[in-house]
Image 1 (tube, each protein chain N blue to C red):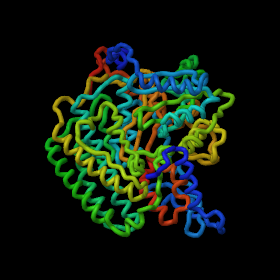
Image 2 (spheres, rainbow over the protein chains, first blue to last red; image 1 turned 90 degrees about the vertical axis):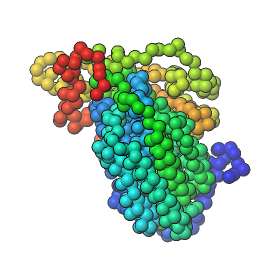
Image 3 (cartoon, each protein chain N blue to C red; image 1 turned 180 degrees about the vertical axis):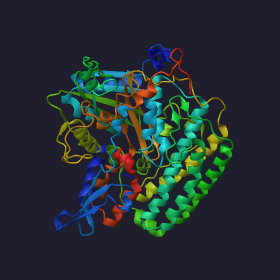
Image 4 (tube, one colour; image 1 turned 45 degrees about the vertical axis):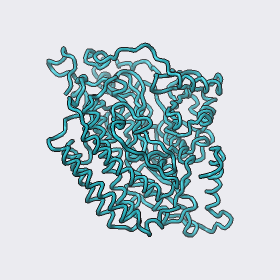
Length: 391
Length: 227
């Protein structure tokens, strides 16, 4: 990639590159463009104030907080099972994945481990959340760049996986299915077979999207070389998930630091990276991730062990005193909960480390010097869920 | 109720205290770089490392970690260790005053891993992808001067996290380029994540959870069962 290996000189060069993108000498009287909070490309209520010089963005500052619900405060007055229902709403497209790191953190403090069957089903549902989340991205990103068809296909085929989540958990969007020590319930009859069918449909959907969107010339023109984020910058902003892997960093918490309670080591799968770091790379990595997730689900479906889905835990959950940070590789990136317990029914403090918050904090850096239409590509490809930023 | 707590029923057998050599080495190197700046530490073998530094070395700790390969910025936040005056069992203080019973005293303040002397502690975490380990840094902030140096020159991502910590806890960060509210309106009064900031919804409708968490009749003697 580059001959310079010293991270700090790379960072300095990258900073210089940003300054060069904007021609400061010939700055004309600019205009301020307000995007959002109700703009389609913000899918939610992110507001971006962009100062423009002609078609070029001089500075873009995201304004957060339109959907701030104060979860960190609310967790201090709710019991652990109650919090589980609450945190479903952080990343609402991949809800089950939100529950897992919190439950795992509580399990770590309690010294409880879920039975193998529960761990298997947990991992399967986790990956299904990822597919539900990212398949919508693949369609929605096309929609934002003017490819309407992809959006409809994504909404159509996402139903396959949402139906599976619903039939197993009872909740289409907010399962609230994970429990300290296991799961609420076992799988319904016939679920494994129907899940295989759903995964096949999703794999076909990935091929379809690849033909329709990723291979499309206009799409590539709108995304290739746009919004390039070098690895060193991505790391210092704390970008995670596909955004980081698209910058060439080969790091996936599922493989490299999988917390006990998930069984990713039981499946044969691959972590995809892309060296370019542009909008196209981020889309491409997500597309491959969806395929890998479907493969993981299919493999794990065939190997689910029998047994109980709930360990022996007290009826009233009291978490012993201690602190624990557990992070998992969620659809949007690293999501972690830093839980401080005082041995009570409620946590003393929960710091929610959500992926989109860090992922979107790079917008002022990456949007500087971009053109206005590219801003849409950049925002879309960074892929955030508003609830995941504002918590 | 204590016999129902998981702490009593599911206590795992404590193995002989394992030594986590990798994390011990990281701690030793940070200590070598910061000298007396490291005022406390805690290692959970095979899991995590906590290091408490003094306020003068807060930024130096970030620089040292980054130089050691901890280049991924996880998060920066804070903990208010004040026992909540509005916590569970504490939300009927007004009723107690009306009925003439003495107000209940909050529990004493106890800091967590790696110790602490002050009410507010900064909390930040960095991660090394090559080593596969993270470090959680803590730093005491004295009540009369809730100021620390900014990490945003070391880890650009700390910018937003420090803005959030500022509005939620009322800190300030020296050298921060854009110290304005992130979530809250500019004219918001108060620091919501402080423990003495009342959650008004809970004041109006106190603690509905208390009904659920009392022992069920007849099960008080049993050990806890799964659902």
